[in-house]
Every structure is written in structure tokens, then in C-alpha cells.
Length: 164
Image (cartoon, rainbow, N blue to C red; front, top):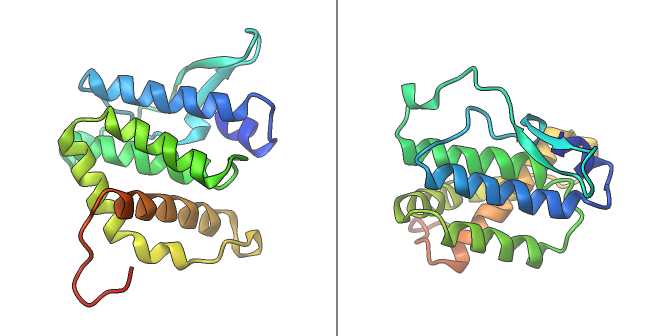
């Protein structure tokens, strides 16, 4: 799965990360969403040359039972970023530019909700970035920091009285 390749710093990992994000945009463009958009659920075909994204698995949950379609699609992005950015071997600027490109292709309601999430999750960017605090802490910090940077770049208003 994509998570394994990212953690191993596979030579194809960054390209596959982009390919998986592009696939997520296409899924959303068709009015769909994933159950759990984590890297561990994105399967890579290592037999093709070069390796390519083969599909997604784990559709046990239906997010639409408890949230709207745009919320489910933002949930996909948050799960994807949380499960990939912490091990992605790419400059922050390149990852941020790619996130901007993906969000530019999303519907306005999804972008607006992602901005709101970036604003609400911004405090999590202050979590430790060192692995000794656990993988989940580092992964959550990386996703929150990326969402916050996106919100800053795209004008999400800050809550009054709260630092950026």
C-alpha cells in the first residue's frame, strides 16, 4: 500500500502520492467519497512499470450516515494528509503547492469546509514533530500544519483573539 512505500522512501513514493491525490480529486468529481482515505487503504500495483495506484479498499463505513457529502470529502483529504505527509520525503513548499492544485480542482463547498478545518485544527500544528512522541502525534501534527498553511494562503479568517 501507499503508506508502506512512503515510509520506506521508495523512489516512486512522491509520484504515487501525487497520483493518489489526483485519484481522490477524480472520485470527488464524480460525487463519491472513500470510507477511509488512509494511505494504508490505497493499493499500489508494484508489478507494473513504473508502479501505479491500483485502487482503494476498506469501504466498511459510510460517512454519509453521519455527515454531508462535502464533509465526507473533506474527511477524505484530512485522512489522506494525516496518513501521508508525516513520511513524505518532499519539500514542504512542493507539498503545499500540490495541495493547492488539488483544492483548486475541488468544488467550492469542499474548499470552504477544508479552510474551516484548517482554521479549527491549527492548534494541532504545535504538537511535537519528533517520532519519540509516537507516530500518530507526528502524523496529526503534519496534517494540521499543512491544513493551517493552506488556510493562511487562502484567507481563512482567524477566530478573534487567537494567534495564527
